Image 1 (spheres, rainbow, N blue to C red):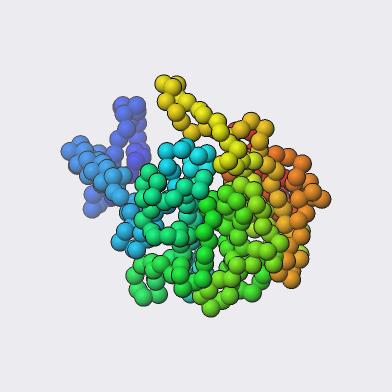
Image 2: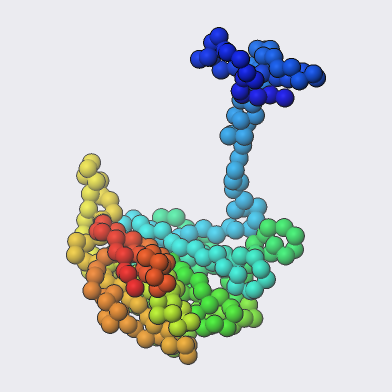
Length: 317
């Protein structure tokens, strides 16, 4: 038995740590130095091995997630090409495991795909992709079910938010784009229906982030859409350069940010734009991310928006 406390009596060298052990008669004696050193060495070896052990393994290829994002770059340095795309993990088929929705881009400025700097992995038309998790077969494996699902999200994708907005038990998708957004209603049979116009939640601006939140606590999820900047390929003719005078991507135009939107769920499959009455339209930000939570503990969900180049915003409900 090892202990890190002396059993009693004065210690002639109190500043030096001691280790003691007990024999079969319970008599305490100081353990041999070599034994202690050996124990410490073994502990160090074990700790080093643990600290260098792999925690995560890249299983993208082995599990069938062969998606490759395409930003449509062609050498023109269009501003939206710099933005990454979003992903949603959600159980679209209700089998208890998480499926994957990946947002895709496409060519900009009316250019053909033959002028792309890097050719896309997929054939035309380029669309977002849905991968079904086959974990119920006994192994982690994903199958591309985009075509079978009826999803035809062909916009220049930015982000996606997943939630059951119509309370039918199936998770739906709202996709933000550089341009018109899309709301995809989950039919519950493995397919989706595009209901953007019917629901009244389109936003033809440059939307990046979105969040589902029941801000009025009526039991129906409302929709917050974060818009980035006022921008069109045709009107943005800026030429920006790096320190070495090489041409580079431009940043956002000063003062050209767009206000966000808030849509209230009526509970009948349609939404009402309450951006003005709720106060959301009062501020411009250049939203890149948004999260909803009860920050002040009053049981009303608040909204925090992460902006680009300007202060973030906390909307207290």
